[in-house]
View 1 (spheres, rainbow, N blue to C red):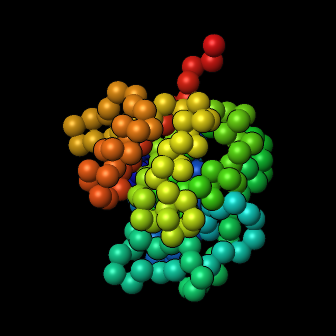
View 2: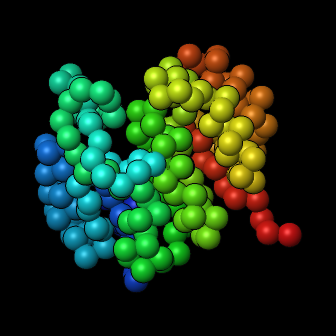
View 3: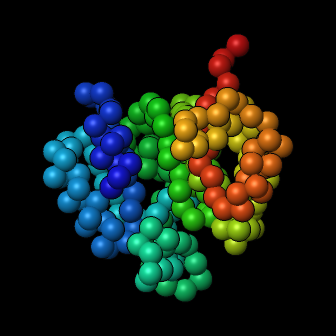
Length: 192
């Protein structure tokens, strides 16, 4: 609920936050945090995962870290939605920002959001972790090049702030120097 409650507070009146959480305990905590913050009217919470297909997915539970559950071959069945489906069901509102932190399945989210991304050109807040991405047949190189090819400028989020726009090569260089994950704010190129 950390980002959800902050986004809810920052969202202007008349706008909403859509939060998606598949795991029972995290879902209850998120629901409670939103209610406690007085944001129940602004935040819509959906129980499930966002992926590249509507239906059911398998969520592998990490018993040692509640923020590290991920799609897998073994685990518990959860509802799966394409972001395009969820947005269509909401009447296709304008989308300002999409945060994607799904433990390596980030490309699945992008695959299921192609129409929304093309229509609304939102900013994207994307976690990039090469090791986790490789578990899903992707890589940091692949996702960063995909975002750049979609005319997004890559900005690395760091403790001291946000970087200037960087090339894919510079972004990859920064990632290999940390050997961990990094968060990128991806801003659409202005229309010409």
